[in-house]
Length: 371
Ligand SMILES: Nc1ncnc2c1ncn2[C@@H]1O[C@H](COP(=O)(O)OP(=O)(O)O)[C@@H](O)[C@H]1O
Ligand SMILES: N[C@@H](CCC(=O)OP(=O)(O)O)C(=O)O
Image (tube, rainbow, N blue to C red):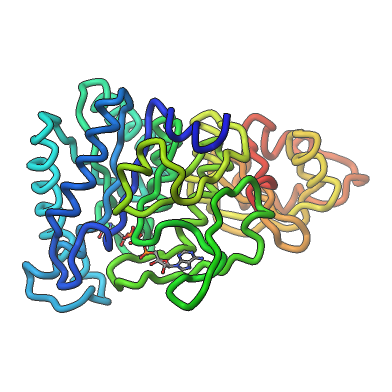
């Protein structure tokens, strides 16, 4: 099945829309564009799919009501704008979906809700139940409490994480640009990339980190990263213009389609690979890298050359090659303070602990296919 057919036929779709597609240049909500998006989502629902909407726009929607001329730089004013804007956004969605007798459920997530496994499962349960009850979940980052250190930063990544979290069959990223180009189309002639089958199709693509509107955050770079993440985890992605939402959510040949490049991971392994916060890094020698990545073995202490970070048994750590490339993540069975005495050369006499797995194969996810 083609990627476009997979997206068009997806039973459960996550649709992400950016700030610039919902707001006016003056910094308020644009009801006409919001209604047009809701029309397209409702049509997809009517065609038999379930939809989770990941909507940006809280900060942008709060600017005009607070008399702010542009997106503030400081966190406290961004949080205040989001606080005012999120209510306006939620209210607008409730009214707009009501035209189709559809109920809306607001879900505001912090990075912590994804990083901690218990919170992750909780978010999973709530979203699944909302869908079972026939509501349209509208997800955003909980900007009023997110601080610079812990925030997702951009909703593209949040959407990719949510897509896997709820077991979506497709992710649709709607933006103010109609596709991925080989360079920023604002800067001159650029070629549309219609299909991304693998990394070779995006080699040499220059993806900017800031959008034209000054309202969004990540630019095309964050969309590309999110599309790669979702595709690597088995979720096909379509990137298209929000103004073309009916076609993007329908059958038309628009935008850029990213084929799933990896297999769908179990929820636990996905969390371990992409969502959990790593608190340390173990550097491995070449033999250990081959063992854990190619032969999918457990990691033993003799293959570790250095230990960085302050972690406890049960924490998530990154595994890196001697050149510093992160090639896997896993849950360690040892505290950081225990390891230095155990790591090192395999020919030395072993205390029992040296043969105990530092990370069991079941708790270890190689990342080579995503880089
Ligand atoms: N290679 C590229 N292909 C397409 N658009 C690009 C590229 N590089 C940079 N861009 C810019 O990225 C912008 C989209 O990012 P952004 O405004 O942050 O979106 P959103 O608000 O929808 O999240 C477009 O307006 C486009 O000008
Ligand atoms: N959570 C923020 C969204 C961050 C953001 O700007 O995202 P995007 O417009 O998708 O680049 C908000 O609602 O304003």
